[in-house]
Amino acid sequence: MKIGVDIMGGDFAPEFTLQGAVMARKQLPEGIKLVLVGPCEKINSFLLENGENITNYEVVDAPDVIEMGDHPSKAFAQKPKSSIAVGFDLLNKGLIDGFASAGNTGAVLVGTMYTIKSILGVIRPCIAATVPRKDGSNLILADVGINPDCKPDVLYQYAILASKYAEHLYGVKNPRVGLLNVGSEPEKGNLLAKATFDLMKETSHFNFIGNIEGNDLLNSDKADVAICDGFVGNILLKQAEGFYQMLKESNLATDYIERFNFENYGGLPILGVNKTVIIGHGASTSKAVMNMILLTYNVENSKLIYKLKEIF
Image (cartoon, rainbow, N blue to C red; front, side, top):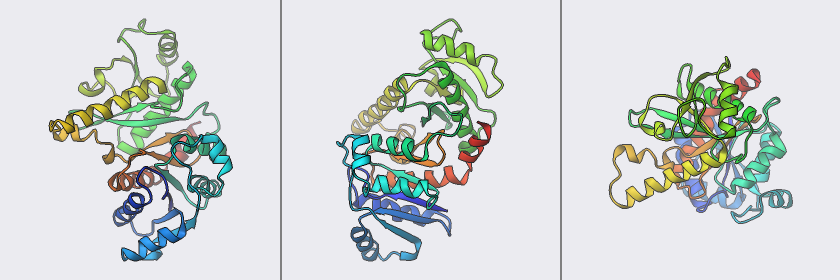
């Protein structure tokens, strides 16, 4: 297996991305090769200075960078030698099995949709996040950013994608899927929530348990998966990040609160596309990059993409 890593992605690239890649290599099984995409000279110099075995890596030159402030689609088209564009070209050609980037999120999404594209039958892909709960388990929340406006059939497919992610990555058997709403009763919610509930209520494609509310995400054991549009999901995700940062700065971070630290997860998978793609946080540290790469390996190793293709 070959995992591509965008060495120039993130606020602290290439130093932290290279450090994270070396840290990940030490935890990956033998035979897994990391393909480092970025300026060859900088990458090779770092590996030699740190005494790394070059044979554990493959370096692909990509001298350009899509900056965080660049327009995603324009930059992807105008910078074909950027680390993101070159990485997706490798992925599309089958020269790598998965690709991880903490770079310009918009450009990563553009690269995903322009090159490897959605699985046949998937209307729109989604991004899934892991929400830690007090009992030690995790809840999968989707979508958290790709699509702010959704229709019921799109949310229905999100439930399939996210439930399979919970099953194959976290070992949850027959995951319970809840629709995030302002009340648990079937008649509650806006037009989207009501129509989606009607579509899900008699499904055999996943284990739908009905509506769940915001206070069920952390303290309840009602569901293993929560479904919402990307507008709501992204607000929840950013709120959790702010909540964690506030408590940490106030020296109130317990072991449970520390589980909200994005560094522990590294990145988020794009579900519903033809290859394994993981998006990292722009402020990724070396630890976050390491965990982003490890997640890329775990998703690809689980054969999740191939299972989703069979389903759709």
